[in-house]
Length: 123
Image 1 (cartoon, rainbow, N blue to C red):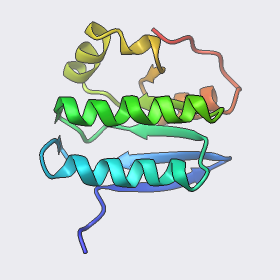
Image 2: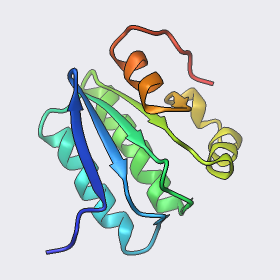
Image 3: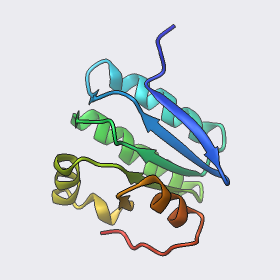
């Protein structure tokens, strides 16, 4: 069995997904998809994906994040991202993905947003 490339923690009803893979492409993407969509399938509706350890990702990994957002939106949930490197943040901004989901600096800011304690508009 493959080692999970993510770890999860439930904090006040919010599922925090920490990605431990530096390069989120090729063989890592199907595992990423399975692990994160599995959470949605199990009823998790507030998900914060922490990408602090991710240095690079391909379009397939980006597609997984968009798919998770779409599935959560249809089911009344919300997705937020945190810990994007400057390169990934620029890529996401250029693709106007800040209009789909919040991209936050740190985990605590993401938890505050998803719990309703802080109103941070999408960029």
